[in-house]
Image 1: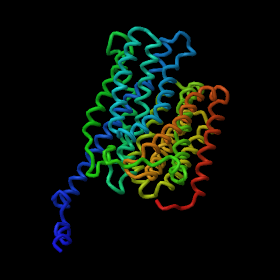
Image 2: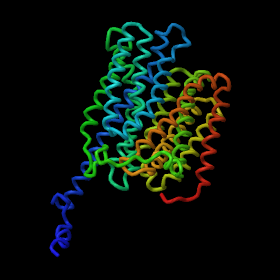
Image 3: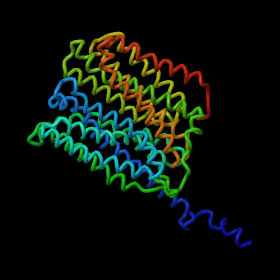
Length: 416
């Protein structure tokens, strides 16, 4: 009888004999600390990748043997990232997210230094090699949110994803500014900017190492949770919705973001005005993270996806209506906001497909599969713009979000 009543006698304590209230407080503090560290990682990630996105085409143009190859370094970064998206998820299943994220950061340190050396030597091939290596790091950026979800307490996995995106709010503005500010840091122009890529990536490593596991070990593979199989996940409505939402959001946002500066210049707006358009777009992408997590919790992922697809479509329609500067600002701003809502909602659907620590395979398919469409949008944007023009391209870009709106809206209510 003593053996049966002993657990009741200690019902107010944790298994280690720590009072339950103290255990909960400790766990809550650990979760808050983990989320803060991961938000810092996301900030450094966006800052570093922002340098490459801001300058690589310009640097490529100065080093490439022909103008047609100017975007090859940036293209290689995207292609390597697309391929690495699959392997990052699969490796996370085997080794845990932290080891994969640290490996990605180490590769970015190397890639930044190689890019810097290529610029100093005036060697286009070395620059291409460096940006390709950084592409592997770029592929790991989406996995910070999955680690945040895995280390979050029950009921806060989806909210943690949105909070994590707040790291992009400041980075969206500071990244391009830091890229240009460091361009004259070394004797060869722009070499200092790629040294900054290495420094920022190096800063990610101690932050990831400082992440502490929850009591149940949800930040790594040590709890030996069997990964959910893809053939099981794809049969669920949550997986299909997640894939559709993230694919449409990423593809349309990338397509119009890449074509936006071209459309602005073609409409007669200055380079400074074109840069302002992109700044508002970046603000639209990340500023809503301050409240989109709360909105996703309050409305549910389905309604948030409906709202996001409507905003994304409206951004395309505004761009189709006019080529004025105001129209470009509003259009790209709405595209950013729509992407944010859909990204948060889509990520919520993803994490519903598996228990904490068991989503590596699901994440690999979602990140890799959607990354293919995003890369295709990036590579085809200039061709489509040259063939169709900004207004026609914007009109066509509004169609997939409208189709998504109809599909998710007609999907009916499912438990959130």
